[in-house]
Length: 321
Image (cartoon, rainbow, N blue to C red; front, side, top):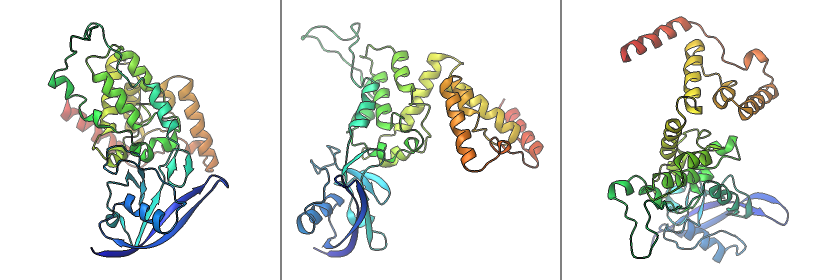
């Protein structure tokens, strides 16, 4: 078996001193090791105090999710040699979750958010028989609508990579919203779609920035971003024209047409049209002032040849009409 030498740089955390620090381990190991096997080698041969979470070693349980060279993934699934850059592999705990020790994070905050969307089937009595002798059948066509979403193993890799959580720590998260989509699509579920959508709206579907990092992180190839877009469409159909998505889209078009840019300052207030939107606008204003910006700089700035840009937009509209 071929051996290779490299440095494993691991971000550690000592709960007794509340100290985070990077520690480097020089290793010479088989080139076939997964990241998890590398961590096990370090724990067995170099430092027994190194702490991480793992169980199945088969990409099924999801317990070994962590950040490897800046990307979330399952340590048991990723080959260490594929992540070595300039002789170094960097390993750290998932982002957006409290660290317990070293690479172990507290998953409870994310699970508490999952509970908010009622991630379970509430049988519809009109569809689900209330006896032990009858089955509640789901057609292959209906099951196909949420088949992929049932592959979620709750590893939280998508949560640890989510950019929306950078701006709003109360954001529900990708896998939580995929679960919301999964039960809305289930024909056996008895909760009204409107109720499930409301559960997914507060710090939920409208906060997603569609960066697609959740898809890149998911070891099962699930695309929470796509599920969230579909939830937005369902929300629009349920609420009619007066909804966050429509107001936001109209405001985007209006400000882009008038200035060539999106008015990020007023967007939350227009889209949400409530105290939450006003609070977001105020928060943006405070951030702008911290950066030394004047009030004239808060909104979009005019640029030359705006008329040419507007004529171009009008031309596209005419071609599409």
